[in-house]
Length: 487
Image (tube, rainbow, N blue to C red; front, side, top):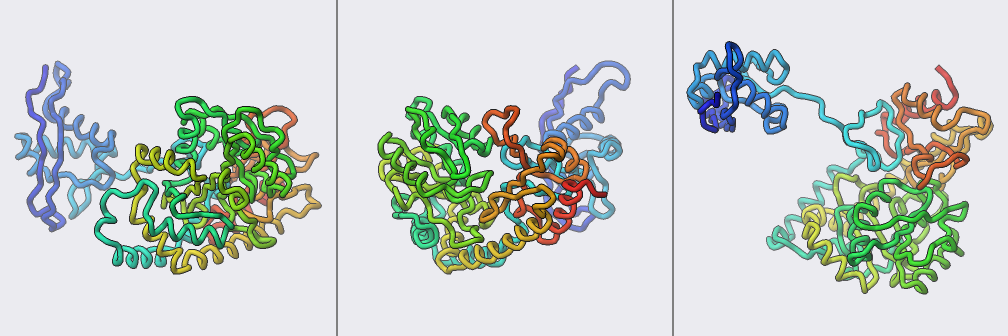
């Protein structure tokens, strides 16, 4: 039969056992099909199912407080004993928790931890995380960020809280133009900057603009990050491999009809080589002659340890290079702040694409970052991080003496190193299996090839920027045990 109870919201306006008078509204749909027969249904069973479904679906989040049994019984027209029996049953099943003095709340449950870009959701968190791609987020300058936010919001006009320019806040674009010019050698007029929610959005917008309704051919470094290749494909691009060697990307291997070449000139990911000056000139010459663009991913350009950071490729050909930068490695990915410095002919199309993507990036974060840059607090933070990561790199190298056959490449810059394995030792898959047994997460070079095949070089990508300061020594010890087969 169909239960005829209506949909209702139970509101607990009484003083709860905890002594607070906070109102609790609970929407439950009790119009349920009830199985026939003794014990097959009834009001208690319907209430249990409604509450259970609300918890499972996430409508009732962990820690959410439920109305008292008295209040819910009054609102639903139930006997108080029926409500109490339903609460007791769901408590026994683990859906609810009865807290002395606090009433009944939804029980906590472990939330899945998203994997890093390129992995699936819900990947378990390892005890020791040396995967590449993340900075030490525990070093986020919280007090400095709060101060910058307060200072920025105190000075900004109320119009800043309205819809804004899809290119981004003028304060941040002006600050970025100054910073990128002096720190990265970028020729950046504020009018040619578009603020994004990160590198991925910038890449996606660009692919859509270059396609113009067709499938643009996008050359991407081989090896390179699989996640970025998938971003291009999902936004309508056709990916072709751009081979790399000890001098970086090879412009001579670009096929005819390529619309854009996506490269990491300062610190090739994942091999870590710097694009050779001859290749830099050849790449910009190709873009000029082919009517194409070079997309410069400057993901960790601030972190150079052997000399001054290598200047951006964009500074040598600003009309043919799209520069993409981000605060993900310097501050943290959670801020969702990135930027594009565009050739003049791409500014309006990309700004329009941004408008119809998400209108504009959040203004408060932009204003805080602008203040951070303008006061040079950003520079100070980057310098401190550079020193911290250099110490970590040096500790890693000390654990990898060349005599053991483990050779680290790409160590002059960045937050990761590519570790070659001994020719007479275990292969990459065997090392990764052993690492998993130690709950140690590492990156795999094999995963980064466009087309993995027998004979392709293997190696481990060690992200020494990822762990916290306190957790890094333990992660290194686990890595040493894995590589050397110790206990």
